[in-house]
Image (cartoon, rainbow, N blue to C red; front, side, top):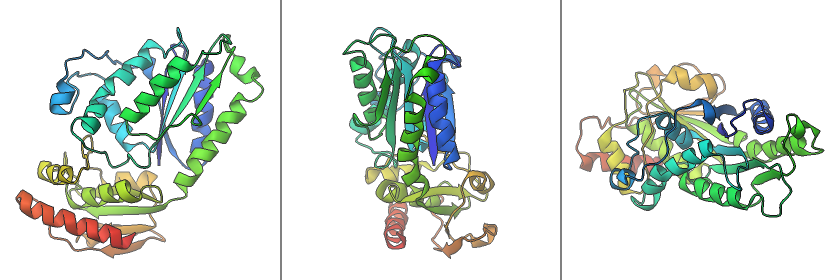
Length: 320
């Protein structure tokens, strides 16, 4: 499973950074893959309200946000960490929130759900220097709508906020803060790392294995962690396959083929399902291997891709 954390403070190594790091360190100890995104070190422009994302489904601004969209789609847990600036998120992390409009458009304008929408969770970590009653009202609302846009489940219980944190080292002096985030990591990560693991394998990782992965993640992601890979991965997923999946409401945007060797670096499957390419799959200790021997839909029309899609969904339901 993947946990990504947005470090939204201008000060690397400051209180916000230390609090987020404590969460990510605990998640890693539990077996999660973690990525910390220090927003202040990235080139992320503000939204220009061109509305292209609502027309085309993608943001047209070419900057580092294009690297973040695929990570948001892969993530099982998204952590938004920021100090409070004038009762809101910092400007740098607010740019990330605003640029999530592209994902909001895919979900609410194009009516497509990304495969992780039913399992992904969100967490807010926020610090403020004052003790005002409404100190976190603004950041809480911003977080709520950000998590909704990126398809992450979020509630008022999924936030940890701390007042009177101003000077360097204040977060370590707080009586419970570090302990709180470690306990929250155990609460949120443990059920996800305990899921059964299924790896779907085909040659190019552009058709069959991607569909099997998407159906498994979308329908059963709360109890099964799925991944897909290819023995000779293509550069990109097939557009006809993505069109066929869009017909059943599943969004394959920002998904890229992955090599089998790369997948096995971070993923130890309990079950390996091959699509007729069982000979290309290496020996994986303690993993059961099942071969579906499905026809390769490469170069076929949409009508045939639909048949393969429906057969894969049926087999996913059976195997679960």
